[in-house]
Length: 327
Image 1 (cartoon, helix red, strand yellow):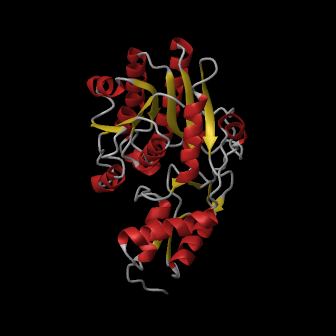
Image 2: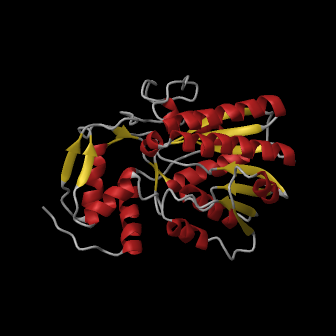
Image 3: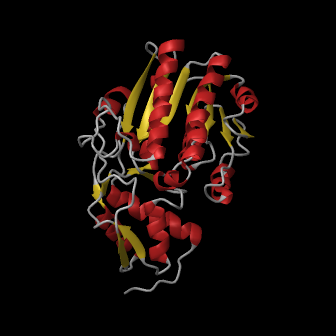
């Protein structure tokens, strides 16, 4: 890979990990982030602290919907890694218009700024949520993906469609990456693995929505980073076009099994409060990653049995070992 990389959402969970990997590989990186108040700014600042001070890194605080912010950040860039978004399936049900503004308008702004700058290589961070709850498992990229069940999923599918338009109309070469439930150090605190770890470590009960049979394809951030780097390299060759790629572990884990893995890593007995399934939640996700293996060299290594203890170790090192009450 060659050329400076602009990373939107650079202070976020996935963004900060990818920025570090790019810098370690000798790349120049410009990061953009607006520190959206969806979760505590201090969490993002922890990830950003690992990047600031490195000679090849420059950070711009600003909104991707601002043409002036993007034009300044894109100066000298050769490729855009667009990860900035308002995440969260359930919260999107509460604020659908905000999600549309940040995720759809924001993506359109990034694509248009890239066009103005003469940049035609884009990697877009999408989501497995675009498949909805009716797609045959395992999910393949050629599935129709036209029945999202949350505003968040709809905004991500809309972003993919914008990418297809720019590839077709302006000759962009775009990799749209459908991430499958990413976890690891600095994961957003509202996501299941982080939230369950915190509650169990503090001796508090877990609210389990549904009967525990819901299944997710959980993917460690180290594997996601490897897939993103492969996608960035892929955009350097070949004709214009937009391709979708699944980045998952290609394996499902039941919710009740996930809770047990976390509890065992913490050495506690979980207390469960059962609630009905929430709107917007799909029953199962599982990635067919054969396309990403073939074209991106994607090869996930971290199993859930290895990844959960690693996450718990990071959590305890970061937050301390809370007093626990087993029951």
